[in-house]
Amino acid sequence: MSVTNSVVAIYDSHTQAEEAVKELQRSGVDMKKLSIVGKDYHTEEQVVGYYNTGDRMKYWGKLGAFWGGFWGLLFGSAFFAIPGIGPVLVAGPLVAWIVAALEGAVVVGGMGAIGAGLYSIGIPKDSVVKYETALKSDKFLVLAHGSAAEVAKVKDILRTTHPAEVALHMVAGAQPAAAGTR
Image (cartoon, rainbow, N blue to C red; front, side):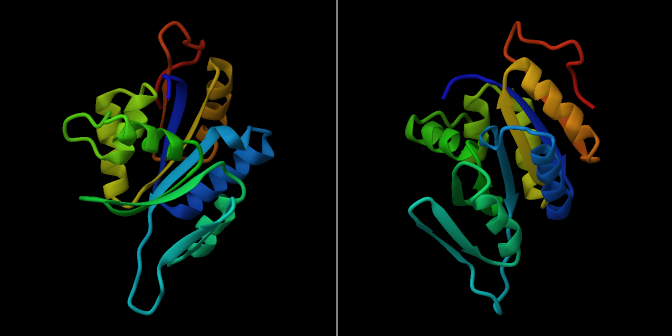
């Protein structure tokens, strides 16, 4: 994939991330430009698994209902077992970026699969490390890509949902007037 303008927000819980996605949807944001990433957990009492039939992915696990709502809403879905992080679920176009980065051997020193996907679209390595650390700490990432105006709008909307952090990552020369981090 090519470098793109992005906005990434970190949320402390799946309910906060879910509310953020719902707010973006209510605000008319193109859901095909949105991704969500987070860990899931399993216990001995629950079956954990997923399958994909056609374009419908089903998932069972502690947060099955949470993730199930995104499979039809966001474009693309995947389950990765990431060393050092554990089971990670991804919904949205980030799935394709991760796969493309892995297939193209874009993995850069010390970065995992998710980091490789983020790095491949132009997110700086120091920010990638921060996002991978957030995932290790059981946080959730919500990210969007698009034009400078689109990602600036998404950032403004995400700020109203009280993320732990939100940051713009702009292609050189595409800085909107209110660029920066929270």
